[in-house]
Length: 288
Length: 103
Image 1 (cartoon, chains in turn yellow, blue):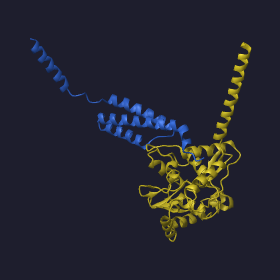
Image 2 (cartoon, chains in turn yellow, brown; image 1 turned 135 degrees about the horizontal axis):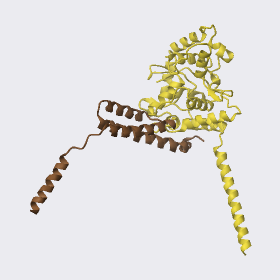
Image 3 (cartoon, chains in turn cyan, yellow; image 1 turned 180 degrees about the horizontal axis):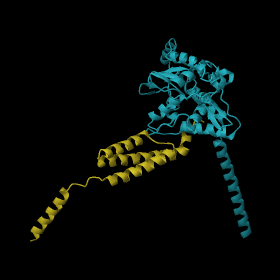
């Protein structure tokens, strides 16, 4: 009798352990990073939420959210406010450094039509490299001082490079390197994490509330939000880089911004760009 | 006699109440600032400082420089509370961010 009881207890314990193990592996499977599934879910979320918006139109941010705004954008594009920056960027891009080399010497295809491949994961460095970072590294490698990540020169250069990629689909790769997947996951975590005294995450505005107003502005959807960068913002009365956009977003939630090109900013750019794969580059852009 | 004693006691108590509270000292301010800065340092390690905490810390230092230790302690105490709230936020968001995730 006692032996049977022990056997029953052992069988029950084994069954419980098996169930617990199955449950644990199910949780692990749910939590395992799957960027392709994320990108698919991201696209579905926004196309379901805004069934009338053409997929390729999401890159126009708030201007894709309703017909009136779209008309405003079409009119703005007749005389775009980023035009001066674009011209300046073109000139800067071709002007040789003191050593006679140019930006073209630092990039594949002479830097023309490559915006859609940035940011990329550099397996040698083990980190994400953004276009802004690559431009400053190019300058430093050629004996020049780096530009501010949030000021006009960087915005002009990236405006020109984006312009040469207009219409090309975003094409971000995640190599088979656990560090690349970790960077992607870190970017995703950053995007969804609430911060600042206002307790906002990036997703609070750009996932939960796109198309809604926050004060006088219409919030842009997160899907394709970086494809139009850099942007001329009427609110800034000037051009702004991706770094400037992240820093401003943080400040607006009353969070102390991180330093430009910090790991978190590089990683969130990687995440947002990856989930926008396939959407066309539309930068430079203009926003209210 | 008893009435006189009561009157005396009441007078003593009234006089005690009329004595103004001591103004805050520099030492009290330094203690409050130190606590606030320690909390803010921890928030920084969690990469989650708030602009409002920084503003209160700056206000505390400004008031202390002007010799207004009451205001300085008030601002430092506020800064510590804000820093602790930002630490709580960063800690709870370590898992809670997943609630917002598009799946």
